[in-house]
Length: 321
Image: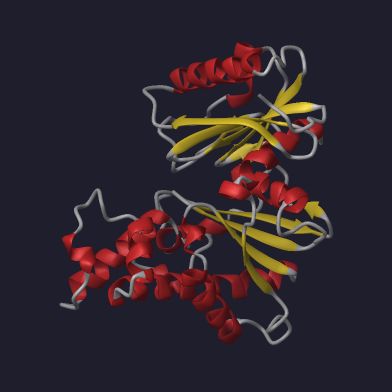
């Protein structure tokens, strides 16, 4: 039984990720009333939309909120806020364009707004997380892919079609020999995503005979999470993987800082749960690589929201904007 006071208006937030889709009912304060998830990889986007619509309907019924939901907000990769469609995502199983807003409006009869998932994370972090009170910051979403949400002078930087901030697809020399899902080489995503971290581990093991428990893991067991756990337990190769990843992120952040002069760069997403394994080498590399104007003036932080819910509650705020 719900005992905490709830504050209308109520919205539904959806975080559409390359691996999982998470959805929730959220009140005005950002409190998550109920939350659920399911795998994103479905036979078609129509099947995905059916599963999501059924889940949302059941959640609304369960909390007796029929008629009280004012809208649905969806954070998704490569989302065009102007058209309500996903255009060209490399980490989703369906061919673009995907008319996401139309699909969900037709099933639920509620207004739907969509935005880039990293933009949604930035909005959530500003409203309820470590960026509360900040007017200039960057959120780097580290998961299946790498995204960026940029807030300047208190406003989300969205661009003409909502595609501003695709920081995961900025190219760097340290990734020059890695092919990205977008078809180009050198994207930050090929190093700093969960897949990129696994690739780094495989490369380091192939290039040396260093002892590591990572060699005993199957391809299914070798993930960014298990590599982080190995690093925390003292495995030297796993630590080397995260030192390299953090160094690359620091070098990338040094370039990003020159565009927006941020107060902070915030890490969000599954990979960011590695915490200091990433932040410490990132901060050190940033200090060496950045222009003197930004040295020692940018904070590096990890999302403080429970369960890294910034994207979810950020998406839930979209119908209220």
